[in-house]
Amino acid sequence: MNFRHLIFLLISCFSFAQNRDFPSAKVDSIVNRIQLPVFPSYQINVLKLGAKGDSLTNNKAAFDKAMALCKKNNGGTIIVPKGIYKVNGPIHFTSNVNLKIEKGAKIKFSDNPQDYLPMVLTSWEGTMLYNYSPLIYANECTNIAITGQGTIDGEGGKTWKTFKTKEEAGKNRSRDMNHSSVPVKDRKFGEGYFLRPQLIQFLNCKNILVENIRIENSPFWCLHLLKSQSITVRGVSYKSLNYNNDGIDPEYAKDVLIENVTFDNGDDNVAIKAGRDHEGRANTATPSENIVIRNCNFKGLHGVVIGSEMSAGVQNVYVENCKTVGYLKRGIYIKTNADRGGFIKNIFVRNIQLDEVEDCLYMTANYHGEGKGFQSDISNIHFSNITCNKASESGIVIQGFPDKKIKNISLTNIEIKSAKNAISNENAENVVMTDVFIGKRATIPTAAK
Image (cartoon, rainbow, N blue to C red; front, side):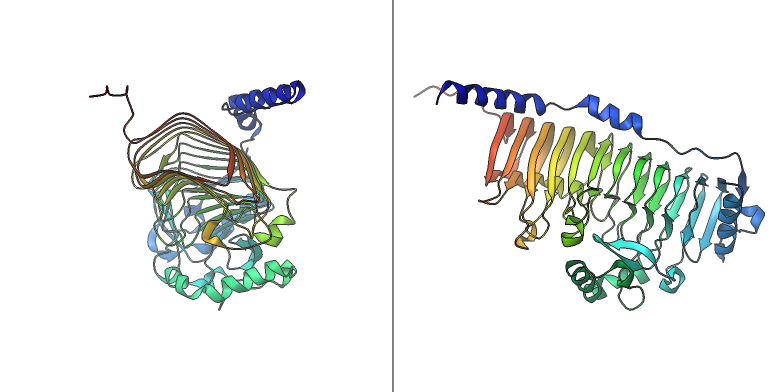
C-alpha cells in the first residue's frame, strides 16, 4: 500500500468513526422546524348540533355539520364531550381544525363497509388507488389535529376482520396495476375487493398534531401519515390487536416527531414506508426522511420497522430512549427485497431496552426471499447502547446479497444476555463492533491445569 492509499484509508476510517455518533444536532434541527398547527378561536360542541353520546344514535350528520361550520369560520375546534358517539361513516377533515375528543369520550365507528363509500384516493400497502375511505381522513389539509384524552374505536374486529381471508385477489390486482403503471384514476377497488381501510389517514397534509388520544380496534393500519410533512404524534396510547394493526406508518413522509407513545399493537409499532416497487421507484424525489422516534414504550409484533415497502427510499431516521413493556417479535427490523430497489441509509438507534424478543436487531435485503432485478442499497446503520434480556432466536442478523452488500454498520455497546444464535452476518462490509456482548460476558482466561 502506498502512502496516498494509506492516507485515504485513514481519512475514510476517521470519517466513518465520526459519522456513527448519534447526531443530536440534526435531531434538534428536525424537531425545531416541525410546525404545530394553529387554530382560530371558533369552537363548536357536537352536542349543540344534536349529537348524542348514548352509544346508539348515529352521529354522522352532527360531525359533518361541525366540520362544515369550522370550514365556514376558516377553522376551529370541534369538541366531543364525555359519552360514546356512534358514527356510521367517515369523518373528513378540512384545514385549520382540531378534533378534540375529551376525557371519557369515545368515537365508535360503524363496521358496515357501505358506510365508507364513495371511494377516496388512498393507498394500500404501498400502492396508490381508490378504496373505502379511511375512518378519519384528510386530503390536502393544513393545520389539523386530533387531541384530547378520549378514544377512537375502529370496530375492526368483526366485519372488517373477515376481509383478511378474502383480500388476496384485490391485493394482487393492486400490485399488478402498480407494476404495469395503470393510471391511478383507473385503480378502483372498494366493494368486492376486500381491502380494509386505515383508521386514520392524512394524505398530502402539513402541520399535523395527534396528541394524547387512545386508538383501539382498527380495521387495518391505525395512523397512516401519507405524503405529509411537519407531523407531531405524542402521548398517544394503543390497544389495537387485529390483523395488520400497525401503530404508525409514515409513508413518503417528511419531518416527523413520534414521542412518548405507548404501543400495544397486533403488528408493527412504527413501520416506516415509502411506496412499493415500480410506483415507489418513480417517486425517489419524495423519500421518507427526517423521522425522530423517542421515549416510546413498545409492545406488539415489532418495535421500529423500515420496509418492506420502501422503494422511494428511507433516510435520516433517529430512534432513541425507547423500551419494551411486553412482547416483541423483533426489536429493530430493517427489511427489503429484490423487488423494491430504493435505499435505506443514515439510520441511528441508541438507548433501547428490550426484554424478551425473537430477534433483537435484524437487517435483511432478502425479505421473504422474493423478487429480482431491484436490490436495495442499505448503508450507514448505527446502533449504540442496546440491551436485551433474551433473544429466543438471533441476537444480530445482517443479510445482504453477494453483489449488493450492506455497508457501513456500527454496533457499539450492545448487550444481549441470552440468544439461541448470537450473530448471523453475511454479505456485509465494513461492519464495526465495539463492546458487543451476546450471552455471558467473558472474564479473564482461566489458568492451565
